[in-house]
Image (cartoon, rainbow, N blue to C red; front, side, top):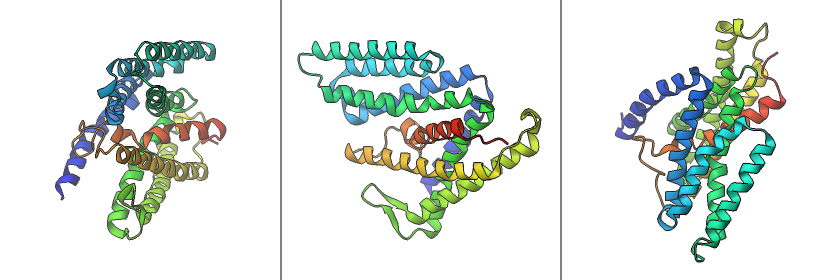
Length: 277
């Protein structure tokens, strides 16, 4: 086994049980875990785009906003708007008193980070609060993990045609297709397991195999878009990884790059189309 692959496997062996425990725990545990992951990810983002080096005060408010934003999942719309307005006002005041050191592009970059990391990841909380959300939230991680694994092995075995060579030279069309197919099948297997072993918690309903498979295909595509987007950001700023928190995997954002789009995709889909019949 290659050293890089060995590191990835060892990190996964440790990380997967932690994720399972968080998913099985009460919602407040996921909230705390989400805040911690978001703050670490935002710190990495600020470092990657240069904000941490240029404007530490701005980054402080960025990390503060990151820690608070997931809590908005439990607020009313008018309360969320009030918080957003006050926060934006603070950023503008900070810019005004920075002696023209903080530019509007810096503020825009920070807001982009807030949307990209804590806001999109907060969709995990939105999913968990839905009916049968305790089951559906697992699909975010199943989709991300299965897509990543399927694309890696399919690309290694069959990859010939480059997918986006200027962004991620190692990714192939065959790998992308393998990720999509395996994710669809992974969602089917998940639905089968839920229907066979957890039917007592579904109040006489069951997961639809057809709808779940379609969702798996869509999630895989979006997860790969998230992965490629993170790769593009890293190339634009000349870095290999966002961090080195996870040996063989990079930083927190390197691990969440597919989740940030998989989570809202699942939330928006299941909010309109039920997976249960």
